Length: 138
Image (spheres, helix red, strand yellow):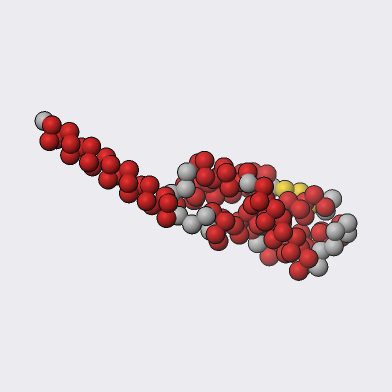
C-alpha cells in the first residue's frame, strides 16, 4: 500500500516536472510567426478602418480570429495567463504599433490622408489578405 502511494506520488512528480519543463521550453509568444502575423493583420485593419470612412471592421470575423489565436496558443502549451500577459503588455503593444506603422508606410499610407488608408484597405479587401478578410467596404 505504501509502495503504491510512493509510486503514485513519483508519477505525479514526473508529470508535473515534464509539464513544467515543456512550458519553460516554449519561446515567447512574440516569436510565434502565426500569432504575430495574425495580430499584425488585425492591427493594420484596425488602423485602416479608423482612418477610412468607407471601410469598417467585420467584427464577427475578428472575434473568430481572436478565438482561433487563443486556441492555437493554448494548444502550443501557453497558459491563459501567459496569453493575457502577452496581449496586455505595453511593450508588445508598442512593438506591434511599430510593425503596423512600418507596413503602412511601406504601402504608401500617409498619416492624416484618408485616401491613402482607403486605397490600401480596398487593395487588401481585393486580394483577400487576412487584413482584407477582416474589413468590409461600406
